[in-house]
Image (cartoon, rainbow, N blue to C red; front, side, top):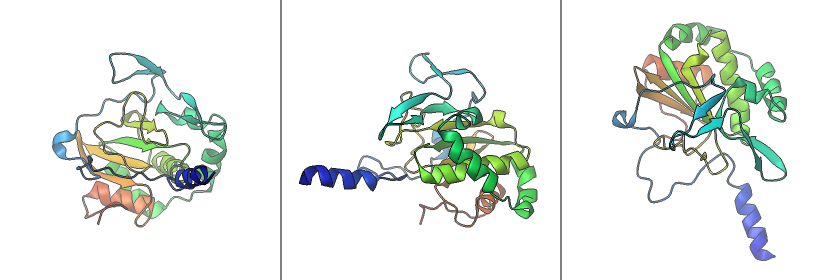
Amino acid sequence: MKKLFILSVATLLVACNGTKTTSETTSETTTTSETTTETNTTNDTSIPSTGGGIYEPLNQTVPDDEDTVILQGKVNREGFQMEPFNSWFTENFKDYVVDETTLEMLKPLLDDIKIKAFMGTWCEDSQREVPAFYKILDAANYDYDSMDIIAMSRQKDTPAQYEKGYNIMHVPTFIFYRDGKEIGRFVEYARETLEKDMYAILSGAEYKHSYED
């Protein structure tokens, strides 16, 4: 019983974070040499995995702990409108108030930006930030053909290994690309606000995400 109690406590402490192992020697931010041009598949009804041309359904749900389900793999907005995910997505989207002043500065900077987002439908930080992110992008008239969003397991992985090479330790992580190169990433929670953090990244201002010194 004592061993089972300790295991249960350890599980609760995982939350939306990950623990780096000694084999992980890269920083949270990938280097330019590791960055490849992103191929968008967000609006496809099915998408190729990284493992030999096998196709996986978009917005796939899988069983999770505590008799629940999570989204796993490539997803889009329609996935968040399915039960049980629509409860937190709809409420948090509705409640979020966009910073209109910062938004006006953001709009022109988003024109040539591609985004790769990693999140977990089981994660409270993702449940908070992802709806807000969509509301900001809606207000900025962002072209969602330029965004891929990947839902991860509690172990921060996917069956098709979409996370491979991106060093995802915390969710949500929003990675921004210009001309095929990563220019910065937002990780888990804002340093100021989501809009202001995005503006700092896209404008080229000095910015460190929440897990950088």
